[in-house]
Amino acid sequence: MSILKKKALWFTLYGIFITVAFLYLLFPSDIVRSRLENAVNSSGFILQMETLRPSLPWGLKMKDITISSASSVNIPFQGDLLDLQLNPLSFFQKHTYLGLSGRAYGGKFDGRVGLASLSQMYPPKEGNLNFQNIDLARYAFIKTLLGREITGGAKGNLSYISAKEISGKGSGTIALFLTKGTYPLAEPFLGLKRIEFDRGEIKAQLKNGSLKMEKLEISGPQINCFLKGEITLADDFKLSQLNLTGVMEILGTNKAKMNVTIGGTLTNPIFRYIK
Image (tube, rainbow, N blue to C red; front, top):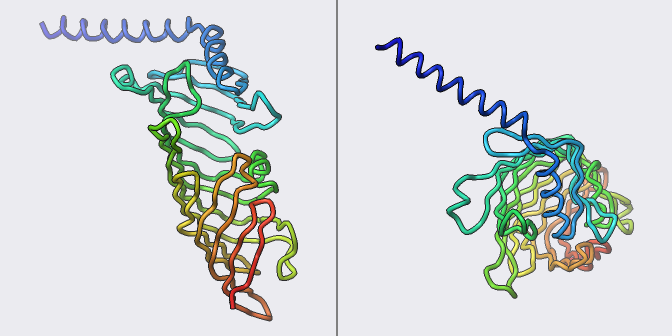
């Protein structure tokens, strides 16, 4: 009797394996790819990829993927690999939830995103993203956002929840850690044309269209910055208004410590000393 049970078990496992193998081999990649591209394109973006394959247990795996803006030359995302996994519980929930993971810009990322539906991917209803070892110099979209290129490594976490009201604005959090990079200044400050840093840390909360900077610290061979305040976001991100205060320490032979405020915009920050 036990032999019959073992044979039945093995035949069941064999049947499952054969079914999965056939589903993988007969997966309609062209049809799924076309529908996915149409869903993204209807949101004002253009999706391109080299290959698309099924990813166990409930997902899609895309290689050499690019998501660009349909109205400009901007490329918000360009990755080596993106793996999307559908959460089966989404069929019983208000939103469609996708797990995501992949490789981009020399690093890795993972998280999840909540969508209104698979046919309406943008804007997302909520999301959470963890990333590490990102090479900022390779992420060209940062230059579009900030108006200048920043280099260095980055890791951290981003979270976002859209507003329930139509006229409202979403909320979220940012935790960002930087290593070994540079940030060019619009105008020389204390003889410096750019800020070189060994490490940096940014913690902020997004609420009502503003970023509340709870912590903005930069440490480097020439200067240390310890700032807090608020950034009022603009539709054109690099024109967002700055309202930061804190302390700057000038290092080197002529050491100095001063209280400062930073106004203006991300493109054109204005430094002022506080006596």
